[in-house]
Image 1 (tube, rainbow, N blue to C red):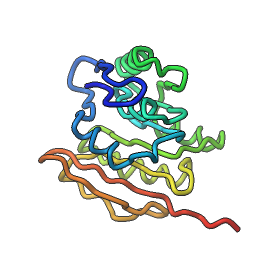
Image 2 (cartoon, rainbow, N blue to C red):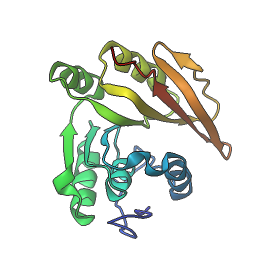
Image 3 (tube, helix red, strand yellow):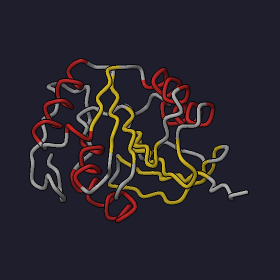
Length: 189
């Protein structure tokens, strides 16, 4: 696992020991960021279920202006901090040890908004739908922003959920699928 391109290109990332963290494979990450392209530049990122910080750090390396990485596991927080320091991206990062659903509520209360939300929860726990629900109830995604859901290939996610519409779905092998949702762009009145 490494940073693919940008300011931290080639930096190797650490993952916590054990089977509790499933970092996004480099080939999937590369494909995803090819899809996102220049959209990442100067954007604010939230990395839910951050694990290693892999996705948020790649976004920062490619020009995102700020990233908040949230996880509950102490081993993951330690890995995220190490990786952020190692990539020299710590000054653009905020790392929180918290329940993501409680964190989203606090972000909403503080009127924090993001342009890209990465959501890569543990598979087979229905956390993608729960995440869409909390992101709807406590809107922290800017109008026109993207939610990138990484989930098990056999999971069926809706084509739309409230204000979120499926923009693209991509399957990777027999185990992983990425669903990209966009918020409805509100017209200026």
